[in-house]
Amino acid sequence: MIEELDRYTVQPSDCSGRCSTFRTYFFSDCSESFVRQVDLENSYIAFPKVNTSKWRSIALPFRPYNVTAFDGTLWVCGLNETIAVSNDRGISWRIQHQRQDGEVLLKIAFIDQNTGHAAGTGGIVLSTTNGGQTWSSHSGDSTIDDFSFSGPNDGIAKVGGHASLTSDGGVHWQEISAMMTDPKIRQFSQIELIAALSTTHYAIAAHQEQGENIIVSTTDGGKSWTPTHIVNTFAGTLLTPRRRILGIWH
Image 1 (cartoon, rainbow, N blue to C red):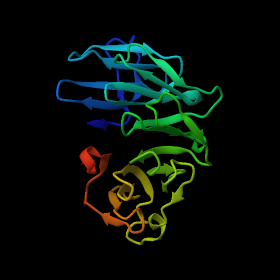
Image 2: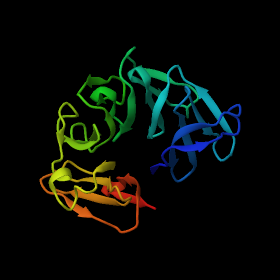
Image 3: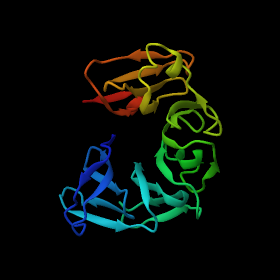
Image 4: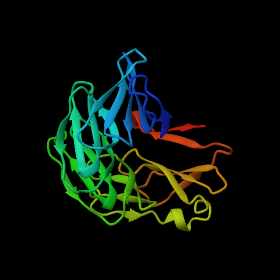
């Protein structure tokens, strides 16, 4: 399970007293749990040693913006289109992709051992089908703040503040018109979270100006969308474990 706790301000116990803003992730399996945190202001990752409360920082040769893990491998992306990988719990890192003066990668995610994507400013999308050994790149027009893919080609993303679908790995994006035209949905104008379950099943958490969230989902590839409004709740995270969409509410 991976849960994004989203921009907590924390003070790790052994990071020289620095207090910075982090984007936080929680990784858990049957044997252990540990938190990885990316410092958005400095070039390091902080995380506790397993089963202790002590923190240690690992310096990186670039500024990281997002971190993920799959099958025991850690991945970080950030400035200059940099993607780095660690196979030893973050002790050492290897640069897999980088372009000086390139875009900023804001998110990286893997859907299996071979298939992964990264995206960010300038509409850039990087993809791999060989476990991150090589990455192909193409750019669009608007920043991709968040994305979720169900396979190499089919996915959903927050592109330029709007929810959009792709069927060609992010080369082209089609804005979801129901978010602007459906009277039951359009009042929830701010896209918060997105999730892809399959090539036909997607979900969006959208925010209303008055404060509440709505979940909008499709099971026919975006031909029709169904809103679900749970009164007085706010969506914190959308996950896709075991081919189900799981919403964490508060």
